[in-house]
Image (tube, rainbow over all chains, first blue to last red; front, side):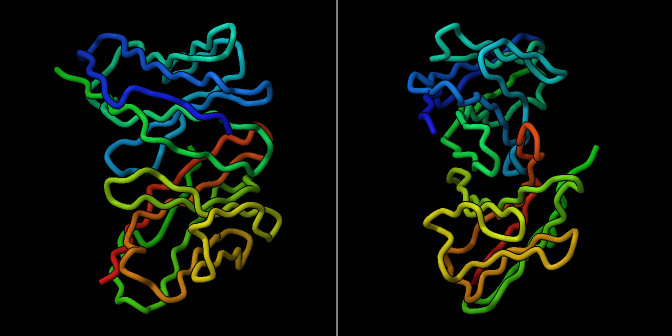
Length: 111
Length: 113
């Protein structure tokens, strides 16, 4: 799986949009970009994934650049409960393929 | 919303003892996983399981570890002879057959003393 690079930490004010960047310059054509988060040692929580088109669900939006070498996870109105470690993971959709977690970005949402 | 459930939530065991961690994956999922997270470190893949056999495993998953799906609902991780360094949070996960999004349980915290 391709390697990803994320900033180690970010801050965001409550109510503002949180934009979390991720670089994945070695991504290959059949690899998807997945985002998970982990709130204080709870189980990782799936957020969203995409291949090349932008995606949106009830939790977040995922913007993938045209060359697919980077992406941004957007939490449109961050709340204190969004404070967590966010992981950007590149992964083939081949069934059974594991997720390889890096260190992620520790997002702190402040009042 | 369906979820992966794990038991026990916390177990303390003596070094050298056998431990079995249990998981009930989401009911229509076909792929099952175990991950672990040592305190303060990243989440690490241990093993994936499909059609009653291991499909992939990491170098962490040595002969001390085994997995089993003893019936139609449970998925277990056995550690044969626990070591101090096995102390960690163990996460079970399962994934959809189509799309293959992986969903995690809340974890079982294992403390080896």
